[in-house]
Image (cartoon, rainbow, N blue to C red; front, side, top):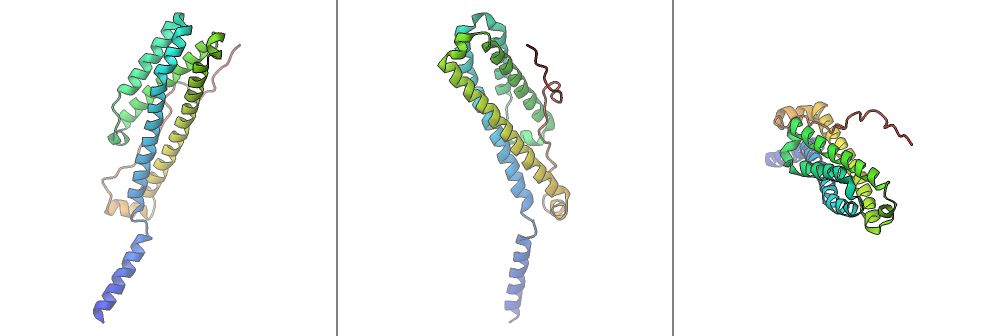
Length: 196
């Protein structure tokens, strides 16, 4: 009889622990890692599209060598930064990575502006397809960043509020508050000026 009570008590304790949030911190940590992988995935997709776009523009705009060189260099810099899971725990490396991606975005914007000067290029099917894919990729990057920001927010909130704070101090003290995504573009908080 006593053994049965102990078993029932143990089962009730296990049932209570499963609903108390003990697994939330590792679950949210994995969601942060997954969301960051999606950000990396979209950056890689963009990096893969850039050489094709540059080659298409090159044929039409040979005199725009400076802009094309800037795009190639920005892509090279963005892809040269070694990224793995440890970047999430290193705010400086995360900042470097974000800055390199921002430079690539800026160079691609200049390349798109160059395309406006070449009507034949704008009507070229290859260019239009690549431009469309690149625009779609930029949107995907924005969505992946948003998802990453939300995952980090949820994780950080969990380890800083009750009852997650208790579980964090007892079981997961090695897990730190995560750095969130920050805009690295110059004057990102100001609206761009458009002149005609």
